[in-house]
Length: 502
Image 1 (cartoon, rainbow, N blue to C red):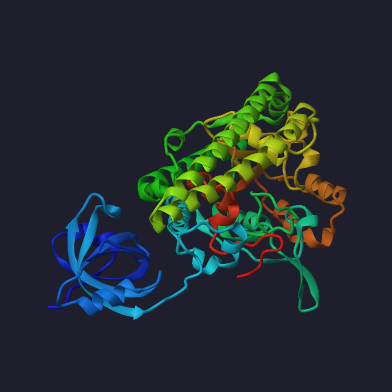
Image 2 (image 1 turned 90 degrees about the vertical axis):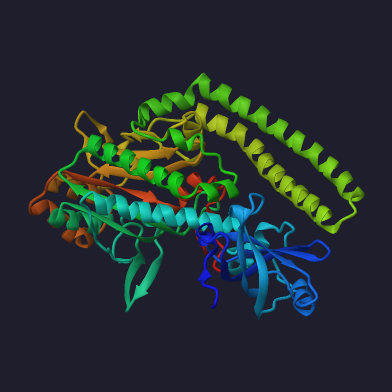
């Protein structure tokens, strides 16, 4: 009887049984007459143990010569072993070589960022990138489940847009059969029309910003989910946003513990994420940035990072000495990985150290009326262990469609949600201007072409109601929950300034 083909994630249900795994050779090592094969199949990684016998000498030698990422079908008996990934291993009886690979370009040693980006199509197979992809999958599913289970209707909005939804300076302009249009920055304006039909709607898809930024938080193409709700005010939006974010966090904690462990992402801070979130007005945020509390905090950060650099430099010296004394190649490779990782971390820390004095100056001299910058958001989020709602920004710093606060016309009824631990903004939202005359005046003040917005003004001519919504950036949320330093790792094929291959 043929062995059933299962996935590695199903081994827990097949202890003691003969099975077949179809996958790839992630790594291998030999122990004399025993081969230890790490097999991956997309659902996980397991150890497969092949013992050399008189009957399988040729097979043993053939498998021993296989290169990393060779494709295999492996048959054997599942047995429990707490030392193996996932707690189970395969006692191998037979191996079918599907495709033999040699000189796989991404080796166990550390590689530079540029090299890995050029080989992104292969880098996706690494355990870290595999883990990030699974966390992202959970986040995307949680987004859909939350809105689908709470009475929202999915509405697909156009990617070709004839007018700006955000700042016109960040549009990717394209030729649409001779007519100039742009790649959509947001689906919001169209979603407002759908909300006045269906009440509670959301769109979910790629958005584009031609922002010439190379920071760790920016992509030119990213995914965003945007709910829009009729008959809602700013407090109602904040309540939905905190329920939404809390639900996503719970789903990741429930479904992705093994992946978070691979990513070395501690979960104690995520366990605290539940309503209510911190609420901080823009004006209070400005006072916080100017305060002695922030000055002291940044001075402490500077000292801590300088100490971290010193400790890493000592470790590099120690590992270099131990590598010189090591006799086995795998030991030398391990030390080389540690040294490379430490050097990369030192480079990153030194960049942060050089930026801190500038951030201190920006914070101390922050002027009311400016939008919060990335460093400002980082400081505020580092000072809190829960997400922070910063609300009621100055009108002139925000988009034309945001409704002014009746109690203070200088500010609008908007909010940003800042993720803790320095990750910054993951959500931006607002109550929308629902008065026809006020919206028309704002369009004129901004210098926009009125003809481009006639359909949008119609929403205020015919059955206008208080309404609002927000947008959550998927990649920034993945970075926060997976503990990723750079947003380029949060999507399979990132698009950034100067980065379009593969």
